[in-house]
Length: 532
Image: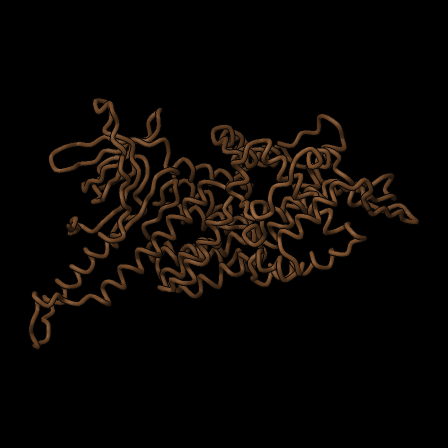
C-alpha cells in the first residue's frame, strides 16, 4: 500500500520504483528478465530527483544500500544470478535486503562505473534477452566476461569513495501541463462510479447498494447496468447479470468494455470460482465471439479481449491456431502477463506440440513469483508429460509374445483391448508416486465442502467413507487422465456426480476426526485399475 504520509522524497521513490517495474513487466516481460535486472533497474531509477522543474539527477547513491554492502560480503554471483522471482519473495528480510542492495549496486556499476564503459553492454544484454536468449547466455555475450570477474569488479566498485552520477540543468524549466479537463457528473453517475470501484475491490454488497441507487436515479446509465451485471455474476445470478449487460451494450454500443464484460459474464456461466469450464453451447459461443470481435474492433489495445477469445476456443477445442494467434496479440500488448503464456502452453498441448508446450510452461514455472502460478505451471508440465507418455504407450504398444503368436490380423475387439491395456499401463507409470509417509487409494470423490478450518473431501473407497482435508486448493496436486471428466464441476459444493480418482493422502494420528491430509487427486477413467 502506498501512502502519502511521511517524507515526500520516499513517496516518490516508491512511485518511481514501481513505475519501472510496470514498464519492464509490460514492455519486456517478467518471464524474460532475471530478478537482479528487474529489481536493480527499479532501485537505480527510484533515486531519480528533479529540483525546481529544471535540475535533474540520475544515478544518485542509495546510502543505505552502499553501507549494507560495505558491512557485508557480496552474495556469490553464482547464487545471486540464480535467484528467481519465487525464491526472492520467500527470502527473509535480511537476505532480501542484501539482494536488493547488490542488484542496485550492480546496475549502478553497469550504468555509471568507469564513466559508463559497460552501459552499452547493458543495452545489448536487454536486446539479446528480448530476442530469446537465456539471461545467462545473454550475460556472457553482452558483457564478454564471467560471473567471477564481474563479482570482483563489483566488490572493488562498492569499496571506493567516489561515484559518478548524472546531473543535467535545463536552460528553461520543464513545462508540465497542469491544466485538467473537468466535467460535472450527476448524482447517478457518481454513485455508479463509486459502485464500480467497490466491485473491483471485491466489496460486492456495498457495490450493489450504490449501483441500485444509481439505477433508481437513472435506469439508462450504461456504467451502472454493466457494473451491477458483474456484481450479479459474482453472486451466481447469471440470468439477471445477462439482462443488465445486454442493456448496457444496447445503451452504449461504442463501449468496448461493455461488449467485453457481456462476453465475460457468458463465459463464467457454468464455470467454477476456480476457473474450470466444462464447455460452451453453440449459441452461447456465437454470442461471446460476436461481442469480443466488437470489443476488439472498438479497442484493439485491450489484451483481455484476445485472451478471452482464445480461452473460448480452448474450452471448445476448436480453431486452436486462431486462439494462439489471438494470444500472441495479447502477449504483445502485455508481455508481463504470465497467465497468457500458460494459456499458450495449454493450446500447444491441444495440438500435441509437446516440445513448445513444455518449454513455455517450464519458463513460467522458473520465473513465477507466487505459489498459485507456480503450482499451475507445475501441474501443466505434469499434464504435458503424462499425455505425451500415454500417446507414446499407445503408439508403441506391442502384444506380449506369449499372448499373441499369430500371423492373423487383429480384430477390432483385440485392438481395443490392447489399446486399453496400453492406456492402463501408461497411467500407472505416470501417476504421482506416493512418499513413504503417504497412502494411495482408488475411489470416488463424492463431495467437496469449504468449512471454517479449510476444505473437506469425502471419498468412497469400497464400502468405506474417507474424510480428508486441506487448508486450500493451492497446495493440492490436481491432474486428470480421464477424457470425459467434467472439468467445470470441480470446486466446493459443485460436484454433480461422483468422480473416479486416485487419491493420495498423509494419514493422521487421530483418525476419529479425519483420515488424513489430502495430497493429490488424479482423475482416471472408469475402467482404471492398479497394475502390479
